[in-house]
Amino acid sequence: MSTAAYFNNLKLKKLYCQPNAFNPSPNKTLEKAGFRFVKEYITTPGSITFEQAVKLWEINEAII
Image (cartoon, rainbow, N blue to C red; front, side, top):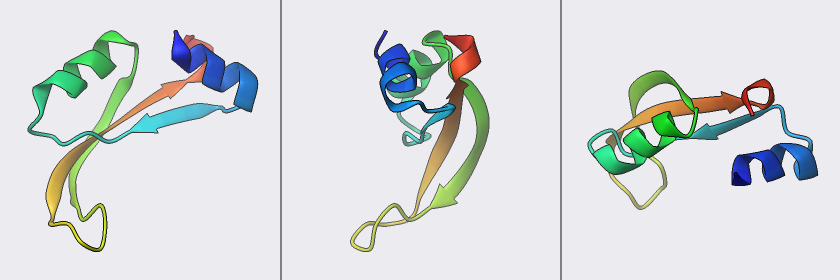
């Protein structure tokens, strides 16, 4: 799994992902990959984009 490479090679403790809340595919995939749902919130991802709902997911190195 590529998450193990991030933890091992970069010595990370956590990984975060924030896909659009209304896009079911990445949200299902993150859950199946072992990520834990943290919260859903509204954000503006960049200066030229619009507000959108995102879901915050995290995975700890201990889970791998």
